[in-house]
Image (cartoon, rainbow, N blue to C red; front, side):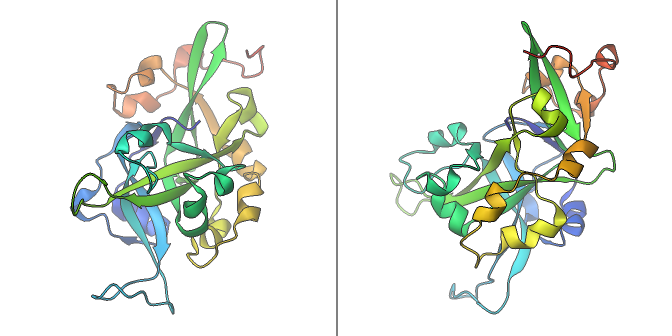
Amino acid sequence: MCGRYAAAKDPATLAAEFDALDATEEHAPAKDYNVAPTKDVVAVVQRHPRDEEGNADPSTTVRSLRVMRWGLIPAWAKDRSIGSRMINARAEKAATTSAFRTSVAKRRCLVPADGWYEWRRDGKVKQPFFMTRPDGHSIAMAGLWTVWRDPSVEDAPPVVSAAVLTTDAIGPLADIHDRMPLLMTPDQWAAWLDPDAEDVADLLATPPSLDLVESLELRPVSTKVNSVRNNGPELLERDEEKADLTLFDNPS
């Protein structure tokens, strides 16, 4: 977890929801109901603005929406392929892992989602679920980001990439999968995004709000989502044949 999610809100809606400026410009990805690794995604960051010479203004910060590649490519990587294996970072280890520790200290973000998918195995069958908020608000997944340049190309353009932090699943989510995104509630956003706060150990160790987790709809959906080639709002529809599925019946 998290390996797929849905992100169908336009940047203007997200900017209002996260009190951020829209800096995605013409690069904003289209509505995506089956976001998969290596795709471009929207993330929320908070940084000190820079002048034309690149000097940061330490007296203020700006929160903005940015486009990033899902799958963090560490600055030391020889090529971008490693990013496809770094879509997630374990919250328990990220601060001491070479690929993520600098980002934990200096480059944190939020990854907005309409909801995420997870698969529960029942014997030989893997049933997909869509975890979403019934009130329509976005889910804010804690993330990390960094900048990478291809060392084999002179004056290579920067590639901005991100990973989603995960933690032990709690509440009803634990019956579907043992991991879940590290979810941030609005009262945590400012502290998590603060570019001057290098010690965020408490936020990394704090379990997601149980009230938020218990309020989520855990919706069984069609196995069409299994294929990244399928992409449309129908993927979010409840699978009526599975509507009576009981989460607590002998998961395996």
